[in-house]
Figure 1 (tube, rainbow, N blue to C red):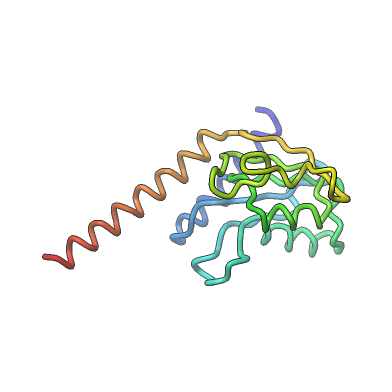
Figure 2: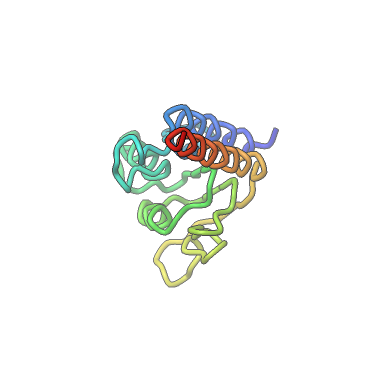
Length: 161
């Protein structure tokens, strides 16, 4: 198995942790020298905090682990294409490479809506590798939202009865 797929599978495991909490299943891991130095999963609903995205939580842990805000020589693996907020944090933390699973047509800033990570107007740029296990990552999100809609529909139906 290719290394990118190996580490993306670890990000998928993080996403499953989020899903078990009722969170949107997004997971991230940060790797340096082929070792995971940090991981995180979406916690927005749990914390009711808009900035507790998987990538930001992993970046925070990686900074603690390395005792530096500069995460040079690292790769971030994330199950969903980073949003504008996470893309900004990725650039500011100097992550060198971003590998993501599913594209995000509504907020993706690593090539879908725009590519903040590889824009020469910034003082740092990242290599971006899209669609690693993208079908699997996308299906996890599709099923999560399908189940959420069904649950809401069933709850609405019960109120009417």
